[in-house]
Image 1 (tube, rainbow, N blue to C red):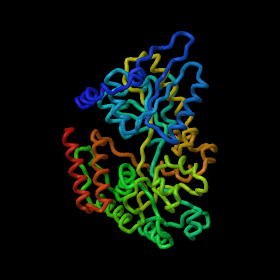
Image 2: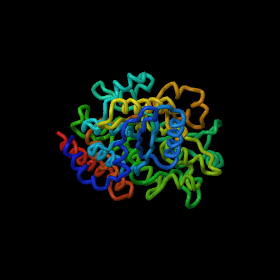
Image 3: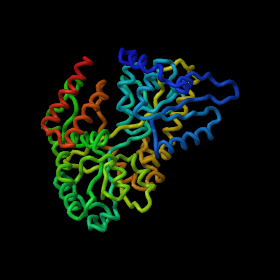
Image 4: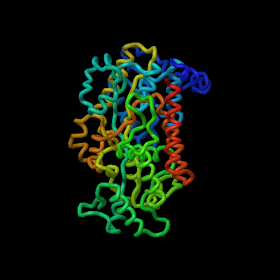
Length: 424
């Protein structure tokens, strides 16, 4: 285990709760009893409620296992998960974003799943090609993908219809390309009154980062070179992506200073909002909100959109093989039942579920599910968490109007390169 993880463990061991410690120390089931499995996640809100329901269905159906499902605050989740492994109190199963897989495997925090998956008859070929590849490292599978989740744009169809901004099919009459995007939303802006905006989207933290990476990859850029040794952020491609974001803000299409873009949209103050598919359960509960969820606009001839995946992993532990096998059976069952998880807006990880009539019958999902075909995951990097922190900080400063594009790109480059150099 690396020095970084040991330091985290020592710093936080005293604050790990008794519940957390007990989670990974359960004994194997006695004959005739169900095997107890602990399952951790950072889900909250709508998707947390849906996951609770799915776990309850498993518990009702399984004759051999019972899952205890625990939710932790997202900002604390990964630190607690790392500490739990170092203190031998890890859960049997945990949610892990696919973008964090290398970080956890490099510190030997995850069990390889190949032998357990074979024993339960899991076919990795059932998952989409992108997820199959991303879930393995050096020939070993470490994660069972549940979904692809990605950036979308959501439109208030009733409002835009009244403004004459929908086509004959009831969809936004916006062609492909950068110019078409600005023409459309500038036209919308010209039809709105005071305290109304064309586009909402939280101005800090994750949302600007997702928009940025979508645009960066559409314009042909990437965060690093092929072998992950050099940052590639002080480039023409990144400056173009940043300049488009700044134009969106400066033109008033995406006004700055938004603390919660989803609330602005559900409060009927924005005709559209930038949000992920995870926002759909929230929007569906708002009385009178008529909306459609669409793939994020493509500004160039390169299809790309920021994406990640919720996966299920088996943290390293001293549990028996029988206990680990029970955990694998639960993960396999979950992957087979992601149609229910699609209620949270997520795109199921197995192609047969995405192609099913049941999935296609769900509102909006089929409209944006095709985005998963060109979903763009972050490249693997042990410095990814730090890179995200750098990017979020620099984007927030630029969006607030306190920094220009060139400075933002240069700061991103310098900040990420320092992190890469520390790992060499």
